[in-house]
Image 1: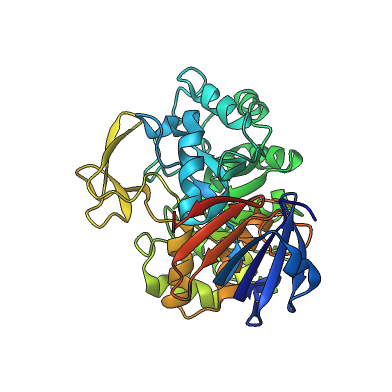
Image 2: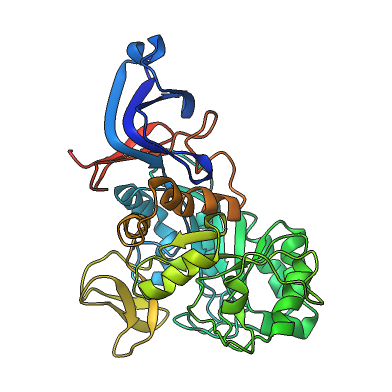
Length: 407
């Protein structure tokens, strides 16, 4: 019997596909992987040298839009000290993340490339806390900044290629159809060739034709939409990005044949998007197309101030969001994937399995992350234990205990 084998026993477990098992389940973990799932107390269960129990077990949360929780004086440089964030995320149930990066105007000379190198050096490494699975590049080809620093959205293709070459682990890139249409979508096509998912966003003015053209340029790769409803637009008669994000199957109209609507992500703090609007999305799209994200830019410390590319930011008095100081401009969230999970269950009455799907399996699927996001044999043992009130009790990453609320 391996000394590092552990057994986790729970009353309720989130299963792949959005299902929930309410039978007592025993999960066996060996050598960083899930190796057994039993509904009975087998010999293997009895002989495991280490035992843990919980009311509820889910896969570890996967945050595909996270700017970091600190570690530097300026938010743009948070990922130069990734350990700071990696060590804190397990407290919130996050076991994997995409390091979300922004690109100020002088990104080739202001240290941005150094930050990219720092991230690339840790991709896929276990043993430091939450695992960085790659990069989500939020820009620089964006039309509407929202809270982003000003960048070079007219970057030449040669510079764009240089930027992509520096990010071999880039999984998603936010890009505006209204900008890329000017070059015949050459940048979206370049992303697809590299296996990077084009995430349409930061674009309030893109027309139906421009968005449809972007989806066609990416086909057969399915596009994604960055933080739906935020820095995007909706009109009942003139479709924009929100319209494309609120449909599971395109109608049978010219130009849409054989195309799939983009998957979507939505900030889960119930502040960036009102719960009534979140409810609309949950009714409109299947949960295998919705990822709840944090868009984290700071820990939830009310009135905390920090720098962001020459601007002062301040955490709201309720600790939920980050604003550009003195304005109503949102510049990210202070919520966590665990906050979103609790809201999905308690506010929208979803099952444990359905809620888990949108903070674990679906984000992994959207970003093409393999062997994580499920309680399944052969998957990495990233596991979250909660009590019956959804309080987070323990977080395991690759079979190792990284957070224990009792210690």
